[in-house]
Image (cartoon, rainbow over all chains, first blue to last red; front, side, top):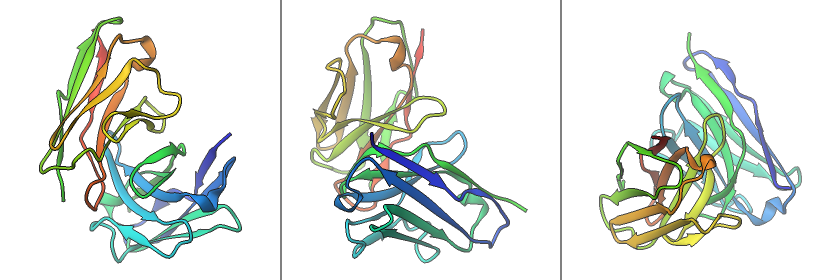
Amino acid sequence: EVQLVESGGGLVQPGGSLRLSCAASGFTFSGYWMHWVRQAPGKGLVWVSRINTDGSSTSYADSVKGRFTISRDNAKNTLYLQMNSLRAEDTAVYYCARGNDFWSDKWGQGTLVTVSS
Amino acid sequence: EIMMTQSPATLSVSPGERATLSCRASQSVSSNLAWYQQKPGQAPRLLIYGASTRATGIPARFSGSGSGTEFTLTISSLQSEDFAVYYCQQYNNWPLTFGGGTKVEIK
Protein backbone atom coordinates (compact mmCIF):
# COMPACT_ATOMS: atom_id res chain seq x y z
CA GLU A 1 0.00 0.00 0.00
CA VAL A 2 1.27 3.43 -0.94
CA GLN A 3 1.89 5.59 2.11
CA LEU A 4 3.12 9.15 2.43
CA VAL A 5 3.54 10.41 5.98
CA GLU A 6 4.43 14.04 6.61
CA SER A 7 6.05 15.30 9.79
CA GLY A 8 7.84 18.35 11.12
CA GLY A 9 5.00 20.83 11.27
CA GLY A 10 4.27 22.98 14.27
CA LEU A 11 4.15 26.50 15.64
CA VAL A 12 6.97 28.83 14.61
CA GLN A 13 7.52 32.56 14.98
CA PRO A 14 7.65 34.85 11.95
CA GLY A 15 11.13 34.78 10.48
CA GLY A 16 11.76 31.30 11.82
CA SER A 17 12.54 28.02 10.08
CA LEU A 18 11.08 24.54 9.87
CA ARG A 19 11.98 21.41 7.96
CA LEU A 20 9.17 19.17 6.81
CA SER A 21 9.72 15.52 6.01
CA CYS A 22 7.64 13.06 4.04
CA ALA A 23 8.35 9.37 4.52
CA ALA A 24 7.31 7.26 1.55
CA SER A 25 6.60 3.54 1.48
CA GLY A 26 4.82 0.96 -0.63
CA PHE A 27 6.24 2.10 -3.96
CA THR A 28 9.55 2.79 -5.71
CA PHE A 29 10.16 6.29 -4.38
CA SER A 30 13.03 7.01 -6.77
CA GLY A 31 10.75 6.48 -9.74
CA TYR A 32 8.41 9.36 -9.04
CA TRP A 33 8.44 13.11 -9.08
CA MET A 34 7.34 14.55 -5.75
CA HIS A 35 5.44 17.70 -4.88
CA TRP A 36 4.57 19.88 -1.91
CA VAL A 37 1.12 21.48 -1.97
CA ARG A 38 -0.31 23.63 0.80
CA GLN A 39 -3.77 24.59 1.95
CA ALA A 40 -4.41 27.53 4.26
CA PRO A 41 -7.20 26.98 6.79
CA GLY A 42 -10.55 26.96 4.98
CA LYS A 43 -8.93 27.79 1.65
CA GLY A 44 -8.03 26.01 -1.58
CA LEU A 45 -4.98 24.13 -2.76
CA VAL A 46 -1.78 25.93 -3.74
CA TRP A 47 1.17 24.19 -5.36
CA VAL A 48 4.45 25.01 -3.58
CA SER A 49 7.28 23.02 -5.10
CA ARG A 50 8.23 19.95 -7.09
CA ILE A 51 11.34 17.83 -7.58
CA ASN A 52 12.23 15.29 -10.23
CA THR A 53 13.17 11.69 -9.61
CA ASP A 54 16.88 12.17 -8.88
CA GLY A 55 16.66 15.62 -7.36
CA SER A 56 18.45 17.38 -10.19
CA SER A 57 15.49 19.57 -11.15
CA THR A 58 13.31 21.65 -8.83
CA SER A 59 10.60 24.28 -9.24
CA TYR A 60 9.00 26.70 -6.82
CA ALA A 61 5.99 28.97 -6.61
CA ASP A 62 7.02 32.63 -6.71
CA SER A 63 5.63 33.11 -3.20
CA VAL A 64 8.24 30.76 -1.69
CA LYS A 65 11.15 31.10 -4.11
CA GLY A 66 14.37 31.93 -2.29
CA ARG A 67 12.90 30.94 1.09
CA PHE A 68 11.95 27.27 0.65
CA THR A 69 14.13 24.40 -0.59
CA ILE A 70 12.83 21.03 -1.69
CA SER A 71 15.10 18.00 -1.61
CA ARG A 72 14.92 14.23 -1.46
CA ASP A 73 16.95 11.28 -0.21
CA ASN A 74 16.12 8.29 -2.38
CA ALA A 75 18.15 5.98 -0.14
CA LYS A 76 15.90 6.94 2.78
CA ASN A 77 12.68 7.19 0.72
CA THR A 78 12.14 10.65 2.14
CA LEU A 79 11.14 14.03 0.73
CA TYR A 80 12.00 17.28 2.50
CA LEU A 81 10.94 20.91 2.48
CA GLN A 82 13.25 23.35 4.24
CA MET A 83 11.29 26.50 5.02
CA ASN A 84 13.15 29.66 6.06
CA SER A 85 12.06 33.24 6.73
CA LEU A 86 8.55 32.05 7.46
CA ARG A 87 5.65 34.49 7.24
CA ALA A 88 2.14 34.46 8.62
CA GLU A 89 0.83 33.75 5.12
CA ASP A 90 2.77 30.48 5.05
CA THR A 91 0.36 29.11 7.67
CA ALA A 92 -1.23 26.04 6.10
CA VAL A 93 -1.48 22.29 5.99
CA TYR A 94 1.41 21.07 3.85
CA TYR A 95 0.81 17.95 1.78
CA CYS A 96 3.44 15.88 0.06
CA ALA A 97 2.25 14.18 -3.07
CA ARG A 98 3.57 11.58 -5.47
CA GLY A 99 3.19 11.91 -9.20
CA ASN A 100 4.84 12.95 -12.38
CA ASP A 101 5.90 16.45 -13.28
CA PHE A 102 2.31 17.46 -13.92
CA TRP A 103 -0.18 15.92 -11.50
CA SER A 104 -0.19 13.97 -8.26
CA ASP A 105 -1.86 10.60 -7.87
CA LYS A 106 -1.23 9.94 -4.17
CA TRP A 107 -1.19 12.40 -1.30
CA GLY A 108 -0.21 12.27 2.34
CA GLN A 109 -2.50 13.41 5.14
CA GLY A 110 -0.60 16.64 5.64
CA THR A 111 1.20 18.44 8.44
CA LEU A 112 0.08 21.78 9.87
CA VAL A 113 2.48 24.70 9.93
CA THR A 114 1.42 27.72 11.96
CA VAL A 115 3.45 30.91 11.77
CA SER A 116 2.54 33.22 14.62
CA SER A 117 4.09 35.21 17.41
CA GLU B 1 0.40 32.56 -14.19
CA ILE B 2 -2.73 30.84 -15.51
CA MET B 3 -5.82 31.56 -13.40
CA MET B 4 -8.33 28.75 -12.97
CA THR B 5 -11.90 29.72 -12.15
CA GLN B 6 -14.43 27.15 -10.95
CA SER B 7 -18.18 27.53 -10.90
CA PRO B 8 -20.41 27.38 -9.09
CA ALA B 9 -18.72 27.81 -5.73
CA THR B 10 -21.37 25.57 -4.16
CA LEU B 11 -23.64 23.07 -5.88
CA SER B 12 -26.61 21.59 -4.04
CA VAL B 13 -27.63 18.24 -5.46
CA SER B 14 -29.88 15.41 -4.31
CA PRO B 15 -28.45 11.88 -4.14
CA GLY B 16 -28.94 10.10 -7.45
CA GLU B 17 -28.98 13.31 -9.44
CA ARG B 18 -26.40 14.49 -11.95
CA ALA B 19 -23.83 17.11 -11.01
CA THR B 20 -22.01 19.28 -13.52
CA LEU B 21 -19.00 21.30 -12.39
CA SER B 22 -17.20 23.86 -14.53
CA CYS B 23 -13.60 25.01 -14.69
CA ARG B 24 -12.32 27.83 -16.87
CA ALA B 25 -8.70 28.72 -17.61
CA SER B 26 -7.51 32.27 -18.24
CA GLN B 27 -5.69 31.01 -21.34
CA SER B 28 -5.60 27.75 -23.24
CA VAL B 29 -4.22 24.76 -21.34
CA SER B 30 -4.92 22.30 -24.15
CA SER B 31 -6.06 19.08 -22.44
CA ASN B 32 -3.56 19.46 -19.60
CA LEU B 33 -6.10 19.47 -16.81
CA ALA B 34 -6.68 17.31 -13.74
CA TRP B 35 -9.56 17.06 -11.28
CA TYR B 36 -9.28 16.20 -7.58
CA GLN B 37 -11.81 15.39 -4.88
CA GLN B 38 -11.26 16.42 -1.27
CA LYS B 39 -13.43 15.40 1.67
CA PRO B 40 -13.30 17.25 5.01
CA GLY B 41 -10.15 16.45 6.95
CA GLN B 42 -8.78 14.29 4.15
CA ALA B 43 -6.12 14.62 1.51
CA PRO B 44 -7.08 15.30 -2.10
CA ARG B 45 -7.70 12.33 -4.38
CA LEU B 46 -6.91 12.35 -8.09
CA LEU B 47 -10.00 11.73 -10.21
CA ILE B 48 -9.18 12.74 -13.77
CA TYR B 49 -6.09 13.72 -15.77
CA GLY B 50 -5.65 14.66 -19.38
CA ALA B 51 -9.05 16.37 -19.05
CA SER B 52 -10.94 13.09 -19.53
CA THR B 53 -8.90 10.06 -18.38
CA ARG B 54 -10.08 8.54 -15.13
CA ALA B 55 -7.38 7.73 -12.61
CA THR B 56 -6.95 4.19 -11.34
CA GLY B 57 -9.90 3.01 -9.29
CA ILE B 58 -12.18 5.95 -10.04
CA PRO B 59 -15.79 4.92 -10.71
CA ALA B 60 -17.24 5.37 -14.19
CA ARG B 61 -19.86 7.83 -12.88
CA PHE B 62 -17.08 10.44 -12.90
CA SER B 63 -16.31 11.86 -16.33
CA GLY B 64 -14.33 14.83 -17.57
CA SER B 65 -14.55 16.75 -20.80
CA GLY B 66 -13.31 19.89 -22.47
CA SER B 67 -10.15 21.39 -23.89
CA GLY B 68 -8.59 24.78 -24.32
CA THR B 69 -10.16 27.01 -21.69
CA GLU B 70 -13.45 25.29 -20.81
CA PHE B 71 -13.71 22.05 -18.84
CA THR B 72 -16.44 20.07 -17.16
CA LEU B 73 -16.51 17.39 -14.50
CA THR B 74 -19.73 15.39 -14.50
CA ILE B 75 -20.88 13.02 -11.78
CA SER B 76 -23.67 11.06 -13.40
CA SER B 77 -25.54 9.88 -10.31
CA LEU B 78 -24.37 11.30 -7.01
CA GLN B 79 -23.65 8.83 -4.24
CA SER B 80 -23.40 9.79 -0.57
CA GLU B 81 -19.62 9.47 -0.70
CA ASP B 82 -19.37 12.01 -3.52
CA PHE B 83 -20.31 15.02 -1.42
CA ALA B 84 -17.00 16.86 -1.21
CA VAL B 85 -15.00 19.73 -2.66
CA TYR B 86 -13.68 19.35 -6.20
CA TYR B 87 -10.65 21.17 -7.59
CA CYS B 88 -9.35 21.50 -11.13
CA GLN B 89 -5.63 21.95 -11.77
CA GLN B 90 -3.84 22.94 -14.98
CA TYR B 91 -0.42 21.61 -15.83
CA ASN B 92 0.13 23.19 -19.21
CA ASN B 93 2.28 26.02 -17.84
CA TRP B 94 4.40 26.61 -14.79
CA PRO B 95 3.50 27.23 -12.06
CA LEU B 96 0.87 24.54 -11.66
CA THR B 97 -2.34 26.25 -10.57
CA PHE B 98 -5.59 25.08 -8.99
CA GLY B 99 -9.06 26.47 -9.19
CA GLY B 100 -10.77 27.71 -6.05
CA GLY B 101 -12.94 24.62 -5.75
CA THR B 102 -16.61 23.67 -6.02
CA LYS B 103 -18.32 22.29 -2.94
CA VAL B 104 -20.94 19.67 -3.77
CA GLU B 105 -23.42 19.51 -0.92
CA ILE B 106 -26.55 17.53 -0.20
CA LYS B 107 -29.74 19.27 -1.26
